[in-house]
Length: 114
Length: 114
Image 1: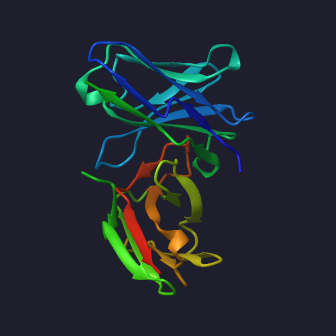
Image 2: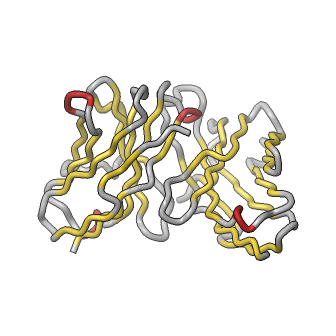
């Protein structure tokens, strides 16, 4: 089936540094999402993005977070500066129609902030 | 407060048995319920889903039973196979105004013993 690729699979950084998580969505999809899963907790919606804009964000999407998809390439999540509580697995998802029925998830990037 | 609850947290069955995974929800506006299957190191993949206008959805060995009045649903996996060993997430979304934002449960980890 369609694949969403996430790079890297694991990233370790020091607190206060900047990190960029990359997502290569399904080629004809137009809607993009980030979800966050802290160890032992449920996966939670962070943000969705369409036509170059953030459509909706949750309270977990702090001011230090930003998303973009420059020139139709990777869909990225940038955290600057990082905090210890940002340690989690971040899942990217994409959708053709912007609906839950058509969501495809990547395998996640495990972010460890030291 | 979790809006989507799953039980049990973990479940072990023998090959050939029926595994029953339970899910309940709080918000009466939820009317789309997908179940995702996740193997270690991979992202969640849509397994089967149901809309609240139905009380049953079947796809091969996987069946969702839905009780709108009690706000409960369950996933039945008949003739369980060792390859079904995975974590299963119940999720929910309102169809109306559906932006692809899903509310996830904590998951049930299923182990099928050969």
